[in-house]
Image (cartoon, rainbow, N blue to C red; front, side, top):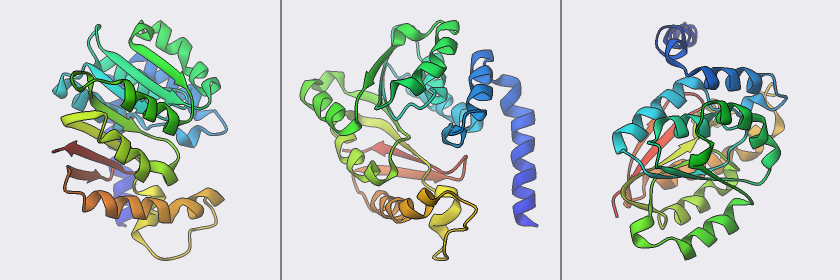
Length: 229
């Protein structure tokens, strides 16, 4: 009964608050992404709506995205930022980004984006070497290889300013982090393979004194971290 109620409330939220306010280009990109064989990787619109509010509240000028896929969260960010803001987006496969690029262009926000085709570790290391203290990022969003989240966190603490936000996607991992039972075979194999990595990340973030934390049951789980020092 509880599961049904949550599902029903989710549909209500989408119908009442999310879809009516979703930007036209976000809607079109979401629909294209949902048809993609790997569409499960897309950021859900209700999560995008929350990210947009966070970005506007921060008055973010410099943001970082690790893992882009087709760019729903990237377009959400670009639409939320002022015209003079900049986004550094990192993904090892530009072909996914190119799926979303026509929608980004239609929305008139491509000029805000610096896309870097690279694995995340070397790209982040390069940024750590290049970015000056007064150029640190206001916000970072991570939706990439889950087994490396814990390592990305350490790098982001050097790139995001004190008081800035780091947001990690998929931290509930299909709900599997809340149980010790075997992963339901209906899920792809990678869900079971990576569950322990997500559990380890969650424990690490929960005990990290360098951040304030809030883990939300939105989408597949979103953990919002505010850098304290």
